Amino acid sequence: MAETLVLLGRDHPQLGDLQVRHSADGRAAIALCAGSDPESPARWAKGDPACPNEDAVLCIVDGRRALLAVANAHFGPEASETLIRGLAGGGLPSSTLELRARLDALVRSRAASSESATTLCAVLVDRAGASAQGFSVGDSTCAVLRRGSPAGPRNPKASSYVSLGDPEGLTEGRWFGFDLEPGDLLVCFTDGVDECCYGQPERSIGPAHLATLLDDVGPEPTRFVHALAELALRGVDGQPGGQDNLAIAALRP
Image 1: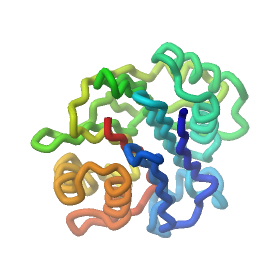
Image 2: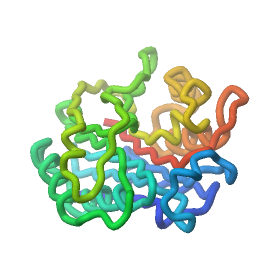
Image 3: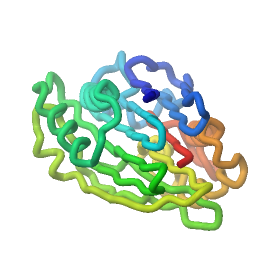
């Protein structure tokens, strides 16, 4: 039976309020937070002062298959919320073709009532076949953490966004795929992690920090997403952190 974990920024607007959810079997977890810095320069990109958290995150687990998705909206939460809520309501896609068709239908389902536009990183995992295929628009990240191996992104990253009512935005997205090994931890996150110092990835969490964190806390998803979120909220190497919304999803294949 499918288990769905979802967190929407609109429901969690408070700075410093870190939300974490995990699957019953402990093999998947998600985290969401509005950030921690009330003076963050990211404030200029918020569409509604009453809703400062515009990220959203989803995990659906059904037997040996799973879907992870994170979305980072700008100028209002409408776009990220529509895509993540819509994917959650439709259950686990049977294929990448179905995933793409559902995304297209969600974008076409309503005209935008705001300037909201969102990134999206969605990954379908075949835990039995030890493989994953994903679709990525924008600069959210999919990474595989494996002891002794680099922890860089597995997805193509760009500056594009998806707006409701404009399916052309999806044409900017790219498919990607990779194999998984026993002991891997699959992680997806928005740029509130790797740009926790807003707009400055070189002063934020990078592959070396992810590798160190994996060594420190291990690959258990709930513990890892909690530790990664806390690290992003604090900042790294003496630099500021918590300057943007963050959403994280993690899965042990």
